[in-house]
Amino acid sequence: MNVNTAKVRVFLLYIIVLLILVVSLSNLNCKFVENPPGVVAAVQNVDLKISSDSTGTKSSAEISWGASPDENRTDFSGYRVITYRIDSLGNIDSKFESAEVSKSIHSFVVDSIKTGITYQTFISSRLNDGSLSDSTGTLVYAGVFYRTDGTIDQFEPGDQTLIVSGFGWDVQTGEGFNIPYLAENTDFIDLHMRQNLSGILVFYAPSLFNPGTRLTFFELIGSGEEAFDSTVLAEPSLTSIDVDSNNVYLLKTQEGYYIKIWVKAINLIPDVVAPYDNVLFDYKVQPVAGLRVL
Image (cartoon, rainbow, N blue to C red; front, side):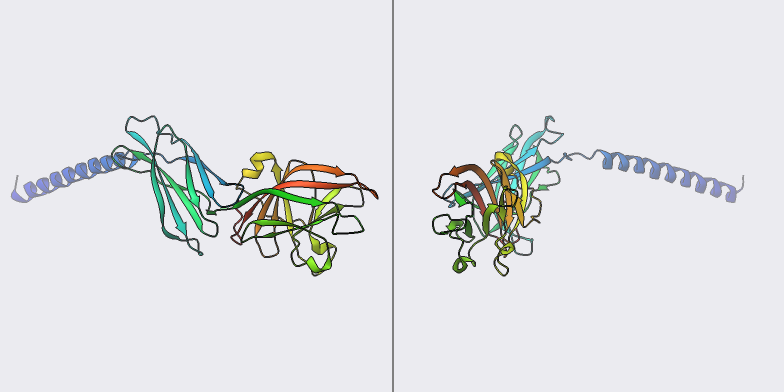
């Protein structure tokens, strides 16, 4: 064997060894990517409920989620819940609060959120060594006003100071007002109620009867407490809608504020001329224009 042949054989052997090392390292790398230490599955199905006391002075957000598929791991410690303040462009402005929740708990209440300030909460699964999953966020939300004093009469021709068929809201305070359906009040009436030609009780946008007055849109979002608490809501698109007991409606005012009303009772009121219906309802008011989460 000459010297050149020996060199070629050594070179080929070197190439073979190098290829074996590359393949081995590639296999190790694949295994690392497929099952890296510390990785944990994220939470699932995050839900949001906005609550407020009846005075409208204190709001809270109840966050709930489905358990991480890895919750039964021995090194699974629980969940991290972080809430941020959100600016007008939808970006994170600052941290509001952070909390650790044990793995046996799948909900958390963000307390004392304010009206007019928007928030977003993120939940991550957490291991004992501090490793975190990808975070799962809620909708952007804010505090709401909640009141139980809504009342409106069915319109009847005659004295509108006795049968009061208008209702309006001050969205900055959350207060609602039963307002006589008179020309001098048209700037304040968001909701009007009367029977249609078939005798069915209907909520109307005031502008349907008096062009130039306020335009309100409606949407039926369900019935009962579950619908009243839901924060996943369709955009209102109707200018009139039938009124039924226990129904929950979403309203959009002319200025783009959202209000949710829950019809609690429809009572027939006896009258000398003709009986008329009176509707009692609870309502939530979101004082952030364009934010359809309440």
